Image (tube, rainbow over all chains, first blue to last red; front, side, top):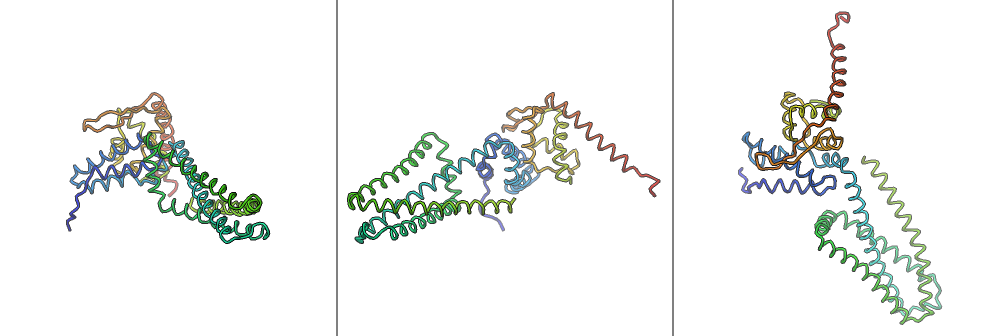
Length: 245
Length: 112
């Protein structure tokens, strides 16, 4: 059966190059050389009577699979690979901090204002209820932020990476992106500060002390649990890595 | 077909030897080796480039981007003095292995 879609050789070559270019293992010069090789290979195959599409398929096959090439080139361009990893670790850390901060901010203040709205008597009921509630809410927020980050990097990671990579290439968009990230984290702290001062005004000094103390206690408990979770996750990843290598 | 290990070990001497006949670029080097070996040495083509770059870093060869007659740019590789020296060493080693194996594999009447 005849295919109706025509094969665009230039586009296919560019797409192939872009795919390889996603990896830090290849420098621009490496890609130029591989592309030059691919073009020579395709041209030779075409003189033997193959169609553009057939020639492209065979030439890319002969040049080797992306993963195998990546690991060999990666050995040469080790610093670039290492810097790329560090870059993504930092991005991941900042995205997580922001998401966890925003979720924490919303849930914590929802709890404060919720209790305030229910006319909860902060002064006479002691610490047990606020501490338990704060801890539960923080843990739920922590789990939620982890799940959200997991989803973001697993499902949208490639698109997010492409988007960010493109922004960081030009100086103007680079500065804009940096500014945007900075503004977002600034908004977090500003909203938090505003909510806190509003609470102080609504509840008065004495009651707010109960909130602060219960918050500190619940913070300590949450930290113990989140640290354990992080160590656990690291160990699971280490085992998985061992099995895969 | 050569084993993976033998391909890895023989790539550098093969490249050095082809380059003694004059400068060349990656695609041509591969074609040349394939031709000379009667299609028995088949490299995963892309794998040659990391080796070439390593040889460049070691000063065995030098490279230059130039426009080819097709109008496209190609990276041409040339042998350097260090490369010639390295090739002499390689030659010695490969010949030693070759001679030893040939002696061992000669038909020996005593064995029958």
